Image (cartoon, rainbow over all chains, first blue to last red; front, top):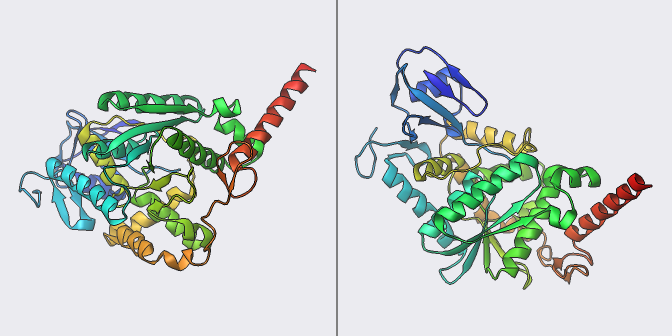
Length: 66
Length: 311
């Protein structure tokens, strides 16, 4: 699966995983601070969506300063 | 996961409200939250001409989009801060959006007033970049909103912004800031425009989701001077609490608004601007306003610098 973040793009082989588990368990992010977007159609993915290895997603950080 | 309102597939879960919503119902939810904030705090009416402070970021562009959809008469004001590529890209996003919604955008360049941009001004005056930037933005936004005939100035401050500054002010018991803080800053002088924050009931996550669903192209890059800001740390702390106990941020901020008079009572005369600046004619607490003082210092330094170089 290809994962885009603000800083970089990483490619990782994954077993099927829900958006919720990817954020909280794998990436250890606070779900209040991110959105997961399907890069193919620019849609927000809900927490129970099951991601597959061929998916390309963006982890959009939503917290800004200033 | 199904939408709690219509039963279609949901795209977002909102634990603070104990609901999941589909795209359409989420958009309606956002519009309702803003409508509700405007009504609850009597921010403005359909008779007002609303200036939207547009940075090119998600909050200000979402705000402009929402107010336009709700049928308010709006126009944007953008300040080009002179922070390199970041400022140029921010302006581009603001201009593109103004074109998209066919609305007027007033662009003001900091360098037209100071001869240079924010980073250099901060260096010359030995002040923190964010503090200088705040002083300049507040002044220019008010002045141009007034000169352009707007009756109210709306900013994109959201629930996370407001709750995190509240936390910071409480941690250090900044009574004066607490006295001034609120969703509406009333006009206390004919040349001081009323300021309002219609996004106070929406989190950053909700606003970001709205911009994605609406296809709003905003500047995703963070201001290079915001890195390591205490306000971001306070946001993380509050989000930890929010994740553990959904709804806390909203409860915290609303509770403060209900009790804010406790602090306002400590400074009954504070919010009154008694003078007009002798240089620019805009409201000031002293004879010369903070903006003009800053301009003088920068002008002197830049002129001295030029003399030294040419000598």
